[in-house]
Image (cartoon, rainbow, N blue to C red):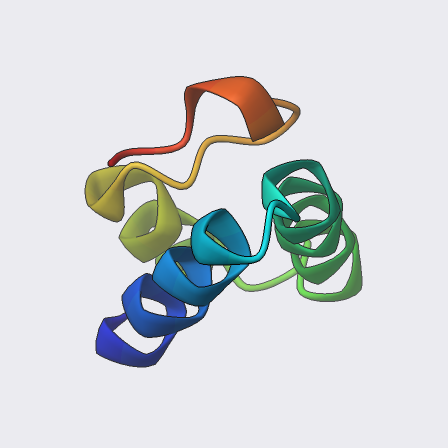
Length: 56
């Protein structure tokens, strides 16, 4: 999750927060059959469909 945190920070710096949120949503779709991965995303605050509410 550390890499996702770094990528999120870069997207915020570059004004691409919505694009980052869309990519998180896409990751969730691609890995929908991996509940432990989805749980890790949830615990880290990367909530599906919440591009504007990603953790700071």
